[in-house]
Length: 297
Image (cartoon, rainbow, N blue to C red; front, side, top):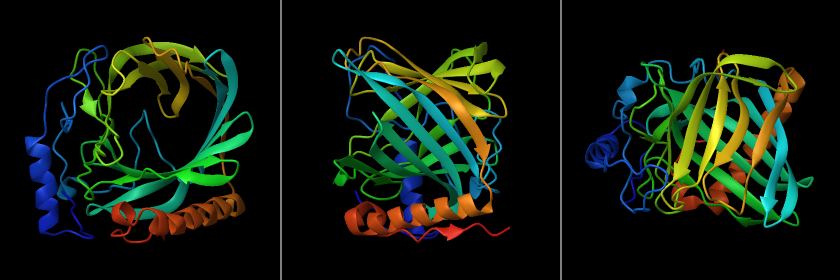
């Protein structure tokens, strides 16, 4: 089902109803994959009215302050070949309304062996309880500098639903939660709390009281990614687990900066250029959304 809506209206009731009836069965790593919509578990149902200051994302595990730029470096495996990896995550000063909720626009660049492999726009908002929601993404995958894929999913279009990216209060032995649902492009990631109170060091700093989450997809039973979140900072390390022999990705935070006005303006310009391509390349998923706008101070 495709929901074409821009601001609040009856279509958001449809999103709410979809969430209410979505499957709540747990499929932990190691279980068989399923094709049912993975509704948010152990979290309030999504509803625009629950978002009082959606672009003020101050969840201690996933703060999104405009101008923050994080760089992770590491490696992954392609068969027996070791590939150098680098990811640059920039919190822009753009706001985009999705499913009736203003969201923070993230611009992320993903390099393999020095070549840009993917550029992505992603959208997050925090509800009044402190949960950070993921409302969609538009990635561009590249080969030799040319776009070869753009598997976008945007909440409210083509059956896509928002999901929890980071709970307000992560806890051990609680149900996993859907991180979004993009059935058109096979996006069905889930997360849960793997560990609390951990310690880890990176080139930037050493961190205590670290949260470790586990992310997995029903399409890859048994395989999962571990993400380490330092309080007040965010993601500082990425690891892996399970039988996934194709890509054992390890990333560590190597740089954390606050962009100056000129650098932030450049990031904004590049993000808007990618959004312009999104309107052309992913009309069904992106075409019904309002353009991103600079944040009003």
